[in-house]
Length: 282
Length: 325
Image 1 (cartoon, one colour):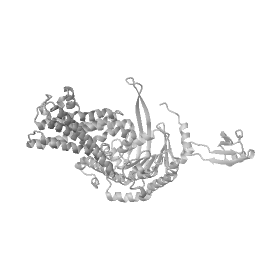
Image 2 (tube, each protein chain N blue to C red):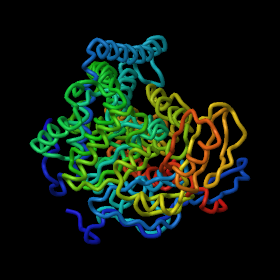
Image 3 (tube, each protein chain N blue to C red):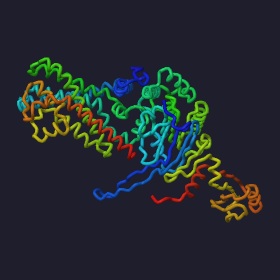
Image 4 (cartoon, each protein chain N blue to C red):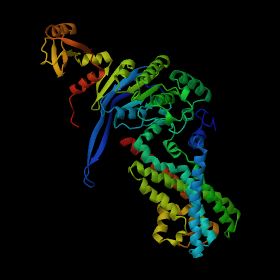
């Protein structure tokens, strides 16, 4: 890790991968710093894990009582909940710190980031990078593995190859939503709470089969804030299930494209916000 | 490297201006008002200069600093720093300048100073060998040794400022921009930092631009003083010139044996009295005035006050026509 960035300014590949390497380096440094208080770190991680387990357990209880929701069995329900949890937790770990943007603007630390030769987005995202969020990722991944095993999935080669693509896309979409909602704080000082309704609210929403909600909700999370592509559409694909909400089945192949579009939109919004900040100085 | 625009100009501002648009009034009936924070500043700073950038709060100092570092986009005029346009080439410029904000740290609050500096090294892509050499040098000069392993949040203000200076200098910047570098520091820390900056300027030829409210900083460090008021340049020249341009009389403070009516002596003007103590503005040679005062009164004590830079700058502000906002 030490000399990851020491190479002199190189070619295009080097330039393009630099943000990722700076990200890794900053995240690593923060993790190491926070690991200096091992008891605190262990307790926080355990607490976070407990929260994640409780959330999934709630889904378990609901399905246990109802038997099935909208034609989804217990194992299938757990798959939806754990996949959504996994991807949101991973996205939160990667980009969740962007929601602290307003604080950085108020305290002036954004200015400090702007005078360093490193993308301020990377600096904000890694600020106090919290390893404890692995406490969410790990149990969610474990339940997802368990549910994948118990669901009746016809494992073709295509599905095996698609699974990682779907996971990466889902994480990218959720991370874009985190970033974009954080960017609102460039324009409205206290947008954090409002943004949380989309991030945490969206997360809670996607823990259940989307077909239990009204059409309006399904359309909103498909075409406006594309959270349907985080857990719901991938599960429909894995289970070979026709979309119970009546949307075209082709949508389940969209996650990679939606991910690219969402990342682009988030990046543009960030640039727009930064330009706004630099032209208002507030 | 950087393409030198002019032979040795580090900062070149021509007609630099910055407006802010304020919205006021109730929602739906908002009025927008444009306020100029900086108006038409022409400023050239050459390599190796140490320039004090002075002005009252709200005069436009911070806006200028933000434009110089690329944080804020100018609304008018042209600006080049080390041959680069800060607003467009912020990231590239950042690796050639060092910036210290006196009021907030660029270090990471929870990391030991050493780790903070190591992170800075990666961000500025300083090769490990150069970093080690430079860190050893700065550790010696700024006496960082005893607290290199301490988390930044536990450092005293003086230690933190020395750490911040180190972080800003590890990549060997050609221009150092300091925003109130000695604010809140004790006398010893101030002296350490001033000596260090002088040495840096003399030995490495680093150009330094600093804002400050501390006269000591200006008197000790700056060959050149630039005063900004209401967003415009009010003075640009050396300290002696500033004092000459705005003559502020010396003040004689007389402690009389007992309270008495205002003294009336030739060559001095009565300013105010406080019990037996009286303040006189000197228009004449001090010894003559003192002799005249002593002739008619019993004097317990005397002090002669030289005009300080703050008084000079304040006089300059008073002299400047207040502009309509």
